[in-house]
Length: 220
Image (cartoon, rainbow, N blue to C red; front, side, top):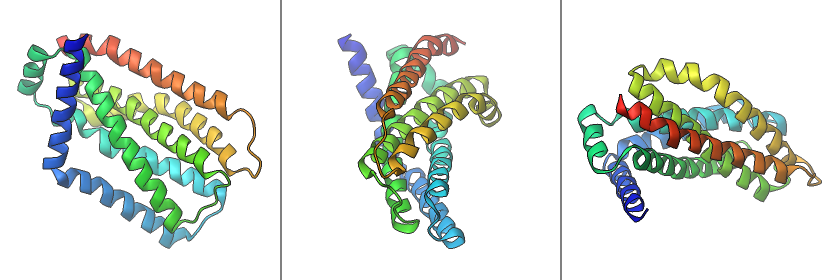
């Protein structure tokens, strides 16, 4: 157990150092967020709450694709073989899930801040939506990290991610959209806790699937 934790931490630090050294990728995603939201502001001004909410989750989806999909594309075959020899498949996928969840959490906070600056703040319960946007960003990152792992091993990254991602991500987005509706109501309604628990349950299922299935992909 202690060896696995050390391996996961070492792989996480490796991804973090690469992100710090290759800052153009990180700043590229930030530029994508800022420019997209600014274009929405120029086109729509400050939309009503329902449109604001829909645009936010749509932007979250595209941010996740841009930020997370590259996680396995930068790993060459020789590097993966080296990681396999020193760490193992489960440690590797857990470190990727952890790193991408942290990255997407940061991107979600940035996008929410820019949304409220440019597109207004129609939120009746800001803290509730902050929690949901953080949880939603992490959930999307887990799904797309798992899909990126499968697509990278199949060597058909973009096409396979689109094919696999659609049926997996639509129910999750619908759940997040429904849960976030509560944050726009003047009176905080019941049911938010159960929806958050359901999202967390889906996240746990994705993590379990990744830990179980990725070692079989790795062996190929």
